[in-house]
Image (cartoon, rainbow over all chains, first blue to last red; front, side, top):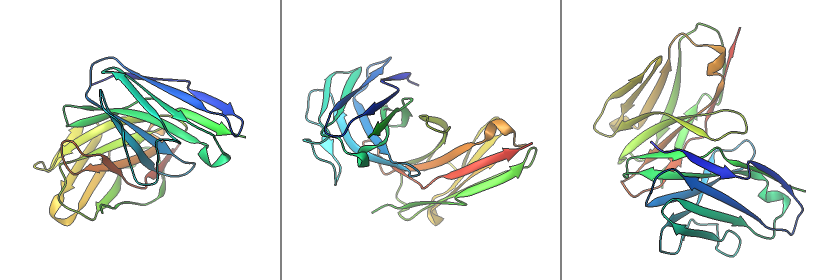
Length: 113
Length: 112
């Protein structure tokens, strides 16, 4: 298993600003994922982040809006840029253990006013 | 494109009742299936994982079954408790390096 922490746990931001969310894992993992969960919806994958390479974005998500860093095997950041109220969501990071099971962080609840 | 559906969308049961949550997926070529629990405003807790070669997995009062050929999984919760109240999500994976495709979720409320 893996223990994952995220910072911040929640934030309220003004439109047009950016927020960087941090994800820390207690063990080295190859693959990390960033998901978005809009109010009342299920989870949607934003991108997959492998250490040492560019993140791979899903359809509908672009690097300019959601830049991701993956500087080492235990840490990643997701930035939500130029925010609008439509970006209000829970953002979750997850890790893949051995290509077998995924574990999730506690999430970051973002409200954009 | 894989699509995952969960029925019912919401369920309310009295404490002590046994219940079944359903998950169906359109592409039977899956690697594994995971059931998660999510409390309001929180992250996901992994409950059970079933590999494509398995028929069921059990953990305490929870039992998950998988019928890959028919594209279905069920999560059985025995003797439900108010603490079981949460949203339950199933997710399928196509391969070892593949993303999870999530279902729509079932919001469960267990009343006293």
